[in-house]
Image (cartoon, rainbow, N blue to C red; front, side):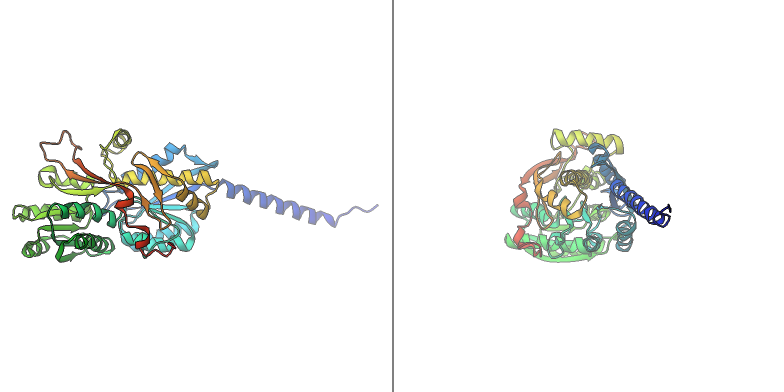
Length: 405
């Protein structure tokens, strides 16, 4: 009787194919959930986000348990140096070859707008926790981009409205000449004009401007009641300091920072920053929950957290909850769950993610304390007003987002 020698290679081939398929499936199912932080670790926004923001993302992963759906959660980060080309190249590399599922932070609006297009093309989720342009959920919205913490519309709606009601009916802008500054000046101007105020002029400055003296002189010459700073980070700090040196407030004009962070006020100091109004989504000393989380952050980082650092913790936590609920890390399924799940954490109560990518949360108007009012190193703000989320952010049908029907 002859042995079936010719069937052996086919049998081996089938076995080998099954082994390879099983191995590939095991490798795919074991692939980690990977989160990338496109950060500013060395440039103008490093104190606002920086290493502390990366650690806030790490805290969220640790608190979630380090795994989801039986997969490890990995965190990678890079210093974008606040450069669009660096951030864009890294995002492509992460998406194409390194298995990154979601990116967060995005320190500037220019970076966020550029990476948003890449994320949409690759069908990857992007959660913007630092950049501010309201165009991210307006004309440049994307089905994969979430604008998490704040935006230029909410800042304008909070601070500009309050100053306008207090009699500041004529304004001069000193604005950063890039996407964020332009959007902030535009949104604030709309609030001012709709409230019966006037914009008397504006000056535009480059990122990391070395000197604001010429812009400040133009603002003083305008005789506007309000000199509004539509910039951020070190630019805001330098503009406020130089405004004080030029005696802007002593001359009867009110200096308003449309975006300022806790780290900015700490750097400026209460003697110079006292009385300043600012709108934020978070303050460490707001309630028991914010204090508890912030004290944990302080022990790890040596500073109290900014709203972008706190916001990044919330964004990463919500993303991981959505993966768990969806039982998948597929971007479309996770986005659907993030929109369905209410957002509740130490800084947000019953927040919601809209179809345009905007997270709607309450915003707070603060005033910087005087040195006499402050009871400690980080006791810098007092709460003036709370703006409900549905009022704070632009109505869904007014942004021009293509996703809104």
